[in-house]
Image 1 (cartoon, rainbow, N blue to C red):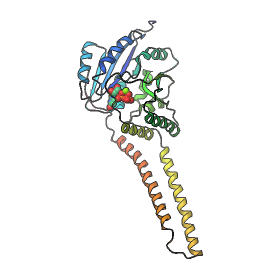
Image 2: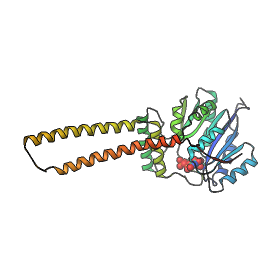
Image 3: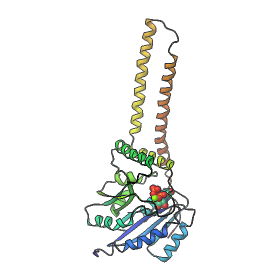
Image 4: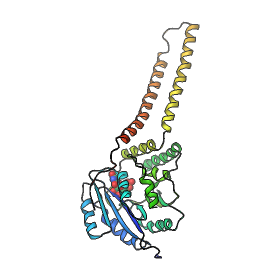
Length: 313
Ligand code: UDP
Ligand code: MG
């Protein structure tokens, strides 16, 4: 490896939540990868309110290695908050974001970093391809999410994009300037612009421990993503309202004319009930959609901190 710039530093931001089983494996693996890197690295582990031995393991690593820093939240604030805290603290000329479970292949790091250092890219991101197709339903949901998100938000999210990436400190600064509370990093990474190259890798299992994501969590995350980057659902709802209003006017006209021509009595109440249900349904749906946005405004106006630190070193 060419020794170009020994004084430059790569900061590694690693969110951890109940990862006592994986942190040491991760750290040891990174020691090997470190040798391949043209510059030095330091670690920023963000303990996202773990209730296992995660924090004490981080403390031991910190004592052993002065390049290991940690910050511990007062409770679980979520991976997005942990990423934000990590990016705020990372002081390197280049910053990498990486999961601790080694699902983000560390051996790609030297290539990614070199690519960013040599330009012309400001960031190198990663994209996961799953050839094993183990979780068919999940894969289908995730593919549809990306398809709709891209249609709905005029922003291009890369399908299967991971948070795993290397970027310049300039880009990190841009990301931090978006101080919104409900963060959707995949969207924010794209929104700030800069040129990003994507490399793909094959999906693999985590080395140890288990994923903290449930299907319900992922669904909520997807809805939050759409609400924070698109207002198209509101437009759709408006058109639905106009459509059913138009339909009602035409139907009303039809009923009046029919009553004038031949004075029929109470026939047709089933269709009436159907119409009432139809309109009621559209209204409920619309209220729900509008409600999501109001909830987002509500949370945002409270202006609460994105995370609360309990201790750091
Ligand atoms: N994580 C976190 N806070 C959470 C959930 C997860 O900081 O509330 C971290 C976790 O420790 C890991 C990364 O985010 O380093 C990815 O989590 P996980 O492997 O559970 O997600 P998946 O790989 O299934 O998407
Ligand atoms: Mg994982």
